[in-house]
Length: 591
Image 1 (cartoon, one colour):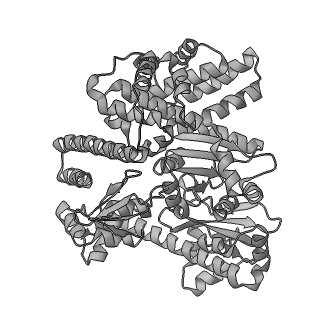
Image 2 (image 1 turned 135 degrees about the vertical axis):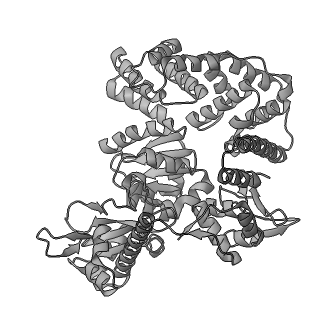
Image 3 (image 1 turned 180 degrees about the horizontal axis):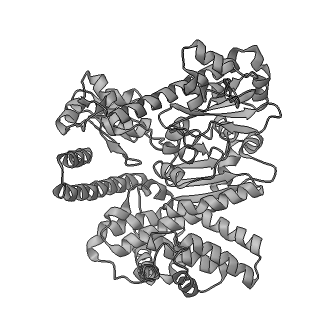
């Protein structure tokens, strides 16, 4: 059975039948505070309770990061589940039934196949985990994990297991539990013998790492050889439920930590992630034996904007970093590159130096752009020919940037670093072959003119001026405003450009220094003039915390206003009842 489109009145009936406080208290401790209930926000690194739940309005809101909505949106965000799954969970809690309709035969077959593959993977993961914990044959595996420093808590949390050194351990277990061995074959857990006489276990004498999707379901397994077997690491083959190009190890366990911290690390291996997690560095994900892909980036973009690539310092690690950086810039994300010292990987580094040194070192990592710049000079040399080659490589990256202000700022930064004129870089970018330049030459030139032109700051934008003045006067508060979506609601184009400029400056240097920003804006006189105007008229602030809270409330109000206006315009253009109901539901979350 499948769910119909759910009418808005049924959705509202479900929401009216549950208490949002009771739903959220299942995941977040709350305390009564006046008319509301408050607690530490689960979506960002919260130290003072900024997360508020209003029972009367049946909504939640965080004054720190701006996350808010109803019980459905809380569950989708917190648990990483789909909208329909959140509705289903609330309906069950409320004792309500949802309208259903029969699936088509093809859809029924796909759903059945999906469920069966999940079940056989779950069964295999449980079998291997039990083998590790209790089997005498797993003594060497337990000793290996102890030698690698993994605690029992880590082993339990990530359901680590051991595949015994036999040809039919899992095969026999599946048969004993009444599971068709053909399912094990379809999931890649079993392998067909060449002569067709039967099957055997794919994983033998290996440490097993279950690979879970965002909802926590086991979709594949990874195995590390204990002996000399090759390959050293072996993953399940791709299947209808597992694609390496859109799967990341640790996503289920660490997604909330990433949301709470507001940033994340990308590493290459199981043990790297586990060592970091055990040391307390939990906003981390790992690739699964493949380079980063556009599908991976979509997952990362759905979590946070700031990421740090942490790969080994060998050629393979450096090349993986070089290949990965452009994907982040193309998606509008901020990325740093931290290359570990020679003969170190994240596992050995964190065990030797600890989490404090890790945080300090990665915080000072180069931006992706500066990493490529320095690598280019090291590789090609600082001769005119070497610099020209480095610039060619950097322009390949710059042409991926869609935001015109960010593109202009990057051009300025590269020109200053390489000692060349900006105009020469713009001309070269304009003349790049179409196959290398996603935008046309006309668009590149328009971007440049758009950032160079502008008008004086209108007097009617006093609140926006005061907001930027406060952030510039108190740069340490800037991270609190990064998710306030100023770029979608600021009304003055010059102030909006200045906001994008200072956030880009922060992403490059890891801090905001007004003096350095003035230098960065040499090629954009209108933005530089606006910045100097604001800096001259910035009054002193006596209560920074109170001002910060007030400014965040103002930003949230403006953000909601802009979002409501956009949805209202879409409502007027809605073509179907389903589209209208969905838009009304979105509008309701912003009231």
